[in-house]
Amino acid sequence: MAKGYWIVRVDITDMDQYKTYVAANAAPLKKFGARFLVRGGPFENPEGGSRSRNAVIEFPSYQAALDCWKSPEYQHAISLRQPVSTADLVIIEGYDGPQPS
Picture 1 (cartoon, rainbow, N blue to C red):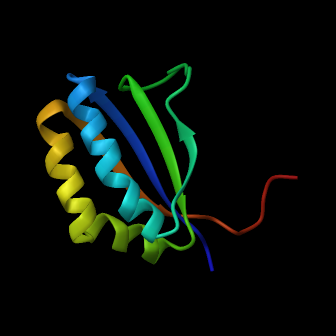
Picture 2: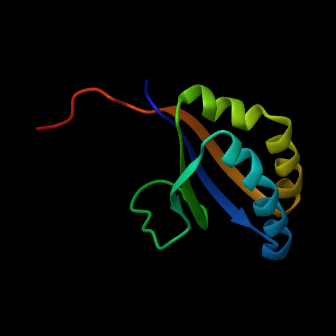
């Protein structure tokens, strides 16, 4: 079964308030088996648009990634984040097929 991923880009206007979102999202992320592969850090944006922070979060399955986002716990966390940030979030199924050789 392919894993699921959240690809997140966010601009934050109030980091102190954003920390309440981070605290609130910990429980649903743990509940659905999430693991951060990318969380902030330096980056270059050689093409297209960007935001100031980026994250890639891995889930055991695409369904777990969807279920986490739809969960009441995560929806509550979103309500804390939205007033102090602008985000782009894509939920995508991982790829287990052939790779370049």
